[in-house]
Image (cartoon, rainbow, N blue to C red; front, side, top):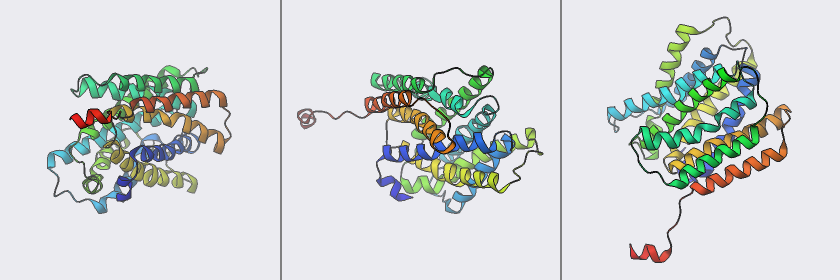
Length: 299
């Protein structure tokens, strides 16, 4: 796991994006309508908690930071997944991907306004806007009649996901060893929220009842959540807010590509390439700028 901290953070974010791209299709194809969404979320995050719990070493981290990490996990995963999984009842996988396009703007807005940071570089705003444009080029098309309900659910999920990312980036747990040894708290918060949702609202007639459904849930819990969120969180500490924001929309072209290649769903290849190129430009726009050598020598 510590090898992750030696890799390029943008490479790590890209690899996690590929892992998460499969998650959308797996949920939409194998779980939506077959397994209760509250149960699916609880099983997924509880498995992630079990994987990380043996490595939990909290003694060197202030209790306040651990509580904050628990709260971040509750919002970024626990609450986000409640909205996301319910959205699949109203939207197709491509439509869900489409409505995630505003996540970069949510991240940028939260970092500047809600959490007190003022005057973000204009290129971060530009990069976030370009990421939205690129995603819209790929997925803008006729959508279903349940669009409003699905849209609102996805925007609630986007907001919670963005808030969690920005809050974790500001959390004073920075060393890879510290992050690895405390990340169980992240999924503890998610498990508590999803457990409450399960108790109050779950339809216990829609439990996973096939090996395939359990296999998907195990992968989502151990791979996409346990490994994926830890790697994403560690990499997010080493990029700026603009890069983090725009990388969220890389999921859309990758997710559509997975949908086409593995599940034979059709898509407009030209729009996919064009939109993907715009998103790539948005990431470049947000990349750190090196000062001229002469300027650095004067500092």
